Image (cartoon, rainbow over all chains, first blue to last red; front, side, top):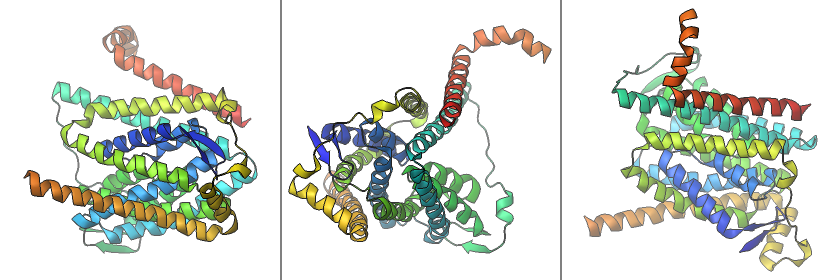
Amino acid sequence: MEVFLPIAEVSVNIAAIFSLSGIVGVLSGLFGVGGGFLMTPFLIFLGVPPTYAVANEANNILATSVSGSTTHYLKDTLDYKMGLMIVVGGVFGTLIGIWTFTYFKDIGKIDIVISLAYMYILAIIGTAMLVEGLGEIDKARKKIITKKKLHVHYWIHGLPLRMRFQKSKLYESAFTPIIIGLIVGFIAAIMGIGGAFILVPAMIYIIGMPTRLIPGTSLFVTIFVSVIVTFLHAFNYGSIDLILVFMLVLGSIVGVQVGQKIGESVDSTGLKTLLAVLLLLVGIAIAYDTFFAEHAINDVVKIDVNNLNPLSMFIKKLSADMPTLYGLFSILFAVTLGVAAAFIRRFFSNLRKKYLN
Amino acid sequence: MSNLIKNLPTEIKKNKLKTGIFLGLSAYWGVILIGTFLSLN
């Protein structure tokens, strides 16, 4: 069944959007990654123009990160102070990212820039995960155990403005999280991703945070970064499509819960290698679309905008006439869906504990 | 170094999977780098 997206002005298959966002959600729950770097390319393959794919995936990430962050807030596994320092850098990074996005959009090169950025990011992450995954399998076969250093000091730790982070039990320069936030915000604005794949390793290896605080703090940072990205995309380009966002959020929230359940009973070492192969395959598909079949991306049946249903017409008018209100509504919409999902999950979890244990 | 070069064919035979992955990744990176260069010019 096809549905017309009033803002992106393309028709997409509902089953395809639900199943893809569900599959990406399962992978997110299984591996603890945001999934934005997979979902945005999938949206592009489904015929959504890259500019719209980036903006709407950012809004979807907002909903899923609010949902995950609320769960961690209820469990008290979140370092607000560290998170806010990363957010400070993230705000500036996002603004620079949106400025760069505008520059490439103005010169008509934004679609190729987004495709190239994805190709390289997928190639780098895919290669790194493949090498690490194969190394782990090799070590497990040969029964080699390597001792890791607890905390390594880099030049970044020696910067001024040192402060104490009680929850993480750390005393280091505020510039460390700010610089990391800056990089994450910049990438999030251009690519429509949460940036967890950069943030999580940086929190472990550079900041040196305790592992139990990392997922919650990473999701907490992602909320602020994706709020800014969503609002600026809605305000500057009117590219947020609430119908698409609703479908993406439903699919990914259900998928994440399923993925987390599977993750509790499956060893992820071998699966990590498979995910690396999947990332590289998506990278190859983008390379093929960009270099050899660029025309295929835009081969989408367009529908007459004047024959829209009342809801689509209302969304289109609101986005065009009141972009600020529309941007704020998009954020509120995603936040509400995210919080509702977290409380529904808690309700079912309590119910299960009460009757099954 | 010369020993390594002499033993390279046997090493390749021993680690067929690793060699395959290495060649695959090299080809992949080659395609995207050349593609980027061509599309930006």
